[in-house]
Length: 318
Length: 269
Image (cartoon, rainbow over all chains, first blue to last red; front, side, top):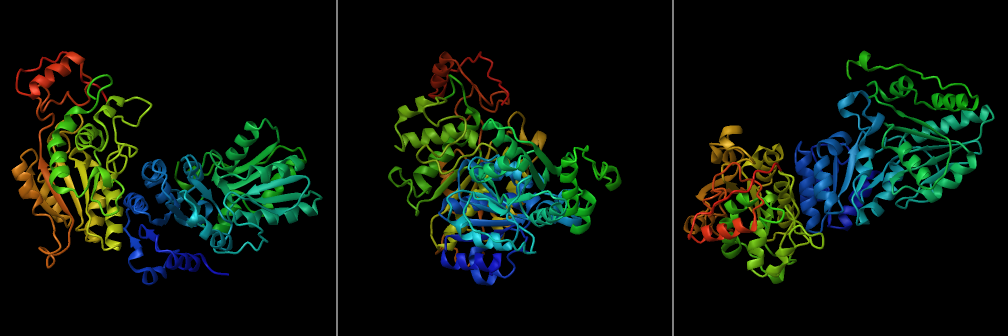
């Protein structure tokens, strides 16, 4: 299986419209400068200039794919994305590094947990949150060929090892069957959802798992039958509660006049405690075991027991 | 455009002479080549001066002059800021501090293709408050974009206040020079002076041995130029004149009589 970098290199060498850009964040594209020469453009730590320049390159027929940490890309340069890429409808591809919990120990300034909310609000912007490199690398050529702008949550390096059947834009992957509950998730949390499924099985709860992958376009047709069948949907995401998957599913249900119970698991009105990823998951209650426990509690009709109290004071933020 | 809904007339008049000079003497563009990849690009980063651009484009035949009667009508795309649905408009703007970076992207593509066309970006002086402009200055210099020419419409006004009374810009040329640009200062209303300034632009044969740099033309202008009734008036930023006042202003423009402006033209925008 080729890496993201290898697939991007192949695409760029085959199509000279592709320009690889970065605001001095080369983690995902370290080997590309000598391969691409002048079609590798590093503007320095200047996200706004990167997006404006990407729009200018796209106006001239190029397909720019830009790289920066997800927070700086979607927050610092938000108005440039909205105005210069969004209003113009240019096919600029935006790759946000260390989104959600993947920012580990960086702290709240680096926690992109409103990126999906912001990017999906831009007309015609696509939003892709692959679970692993395999999914990203396999889908990348299709994204580069699409005439639309696209925001990509750059995934963790650990493979999820699930069988995938489709790599089309806007298609979810039905990863596991289940009758009692359907867990909807995206990004690396997919592997925690699969852990939760195995735990729930031991307690005679049959959980289905959907890798939503595309937050926009959202695979309503693929997801609805499974959600209706199980009778309980769980949205599981490293994003603020507002504007992410819980919002997207709720909007779709209401718009279609459907009533299905939804248990949202997301970051509610808070940033998360910085630390190494496994410790963050444990502290914040986002491991597979935590997820299984939350779902069991729901089935036991017990009140949901928050694993944690407000932590902002402890971290010294707020 | 300055009546029945109004427009930013003062900031348009300060750069009207610049646009006339650019379109008639400098830019390699024409109405029948608006999509020609070998054309020069002019980007209006201070988008609120779009009446000056539309007036110029209409005079040059990019679209019928009658189309300007669609100003603020929802059946067209002519409003207070540029829209590229109008022939000759290269990109939309409105939010300040964007089009230097968009111009950098166009200039980078031209460099990749070893093309000889150039990118001109018209900036407002108040717009220089925006940090993104200074980001772009560094990047344009780093990438040696000698095919990029920024033009500062130095009319000495922010929206409501003189630049030097709020966020002083002077000395301005040395700032650009320190950022790695060539800087040329000129009178922005005198065509002879403009001719001298623009003849100093980088040229493949003339400057091939010199370091490759982007160039800024700092054009000293007068906000409201040509209409003494509104020239250099901080309260004539966004104006919405009555038809009578427009008639008087046209008389004033032709030097016949001073206009008597009574309407409350100070509008917060």
